[in-house]
Amino acid sequence: MAGRIVITGAGGQVGRFLAGEATRRGFEVSALTHRQCDIADPAAAERFIAEGDLVVNCAAIANVDTAEADPDSAYAVNTTGPENVAHACARVGAQLIHLSTDYVFSGEQRHPYEVGDTAAPLGVYGRTKLAGELAVLAAMPDAHIVRTSWVYTGADGTDVVAVLRRLAATDRTVEAVDDQTGSPTYVKDLVGALFEIGAGDIREPVLHVANDGACTRYDQARAVFEELGADPGRVRPVSAAQSARKAPRPAYSALSTAMSVRAGLTPMRPWREALAEALAQPITGGQLPSTP
Image (cartoon, rainbow, N blue to C red):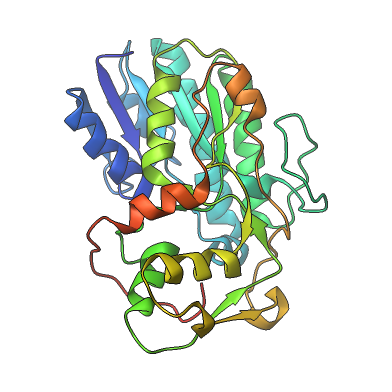
């Protein structure tokens, strides 16, 4: 693996966790927030990437509703930005891992999506992320695209699991969507896989990295309450239509990691097992949305 790890989008949950873990493992780390390195600026990445670096692009407009409301910004950050990073890496001889999403799929099937399944995103977020994948591989065919699903830390007060933890400690009733299914992924397990990929022994260009299994948001919320000893009966199911979100979301976006395992990635543990570990970690502050 490279001696230095450069993280773009280091202000997000994956970037922050990755920077901390890379430092703990003894790597030299350059953790770049959007303010320090706006990847939509073609010259920005050039200033920070050097020969031999491992670059992990975590930068994205990942809020699905924000992307839907501002497609120009989403395209700049989710499509043009990764392309700029890929060109910079290719020019100097750096390694690149680019994070993508399960939302590149339409959600029409009801079994976990394989890497080779047809991508047909429903909204601006998924479309710009898919375009970013294609742009990265066109600029740098030996880059790695890592699609993941429903990532959470469980400790950051803004992510779904941390929100549910805080709500579980109240007497509030919680609504959670019961007609959207995905593969909840603990950020610690995702980051562990990124280090494996960065070691350079995995050749597949597109990989799925997610904890094993699938559930609805409703199932996930009940699981959090159960793990914490709170009454899961306080979690009430609602439909996606009732939740009144602005952007369309796939009804089913669970990811199969079978090809990733065949390519050499360590199999991911079940999502419920990972959730239990996440909930054992201390929680930080943050504001709580009412409906995960």
